[in-house]
Image 1 (tube, one colour):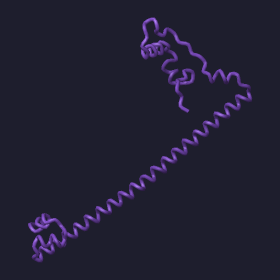
Image 2 (tube, one colour; image 1 turned 180 degrees about the vertical axis):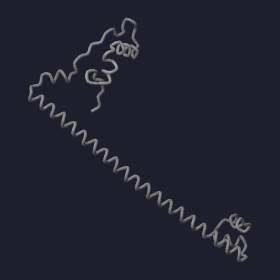
Image 3 (cartoon, helix red, strand yellow; image 1 turned 135 degrees about the vertical axis):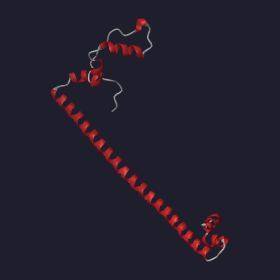
Image 4 (cartoon, helix red, strand yellow; image 1 turned 60 degrees about the horizontal axis):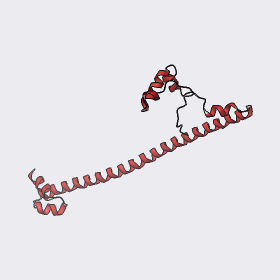
Length: 154
């Protein structure tokens, strides 16, 4: 449950900022609103929350039941938060595993391509040493003619 309103009686930050400085609260509220001089807030009054009014009429048994209910809500929220956190961790682990698998696959493909290129280059050098033309070596190794010409120049 998300609170829509600040509870000035229960919110510690509110009390720290405005508790002993009522003028700060009046200045803040007046600056947030576009009011005429005669409409400005001059004083503030804290009213009891609806929940406090309802609780004040509880019998002892109702008050215990009320407290027990909110304790169970708190436990349920904690369990949900724990499940959410565990789900996030499991999801992250699975995502990391998949990412590593894909990364390894790409790395292996790249390694194979580099190995094939290196082997073809060595073969091209041997064929050139045997006296074959650059065009023949290019056809035999499927390497670009430019690479073969560069090999024959070295």
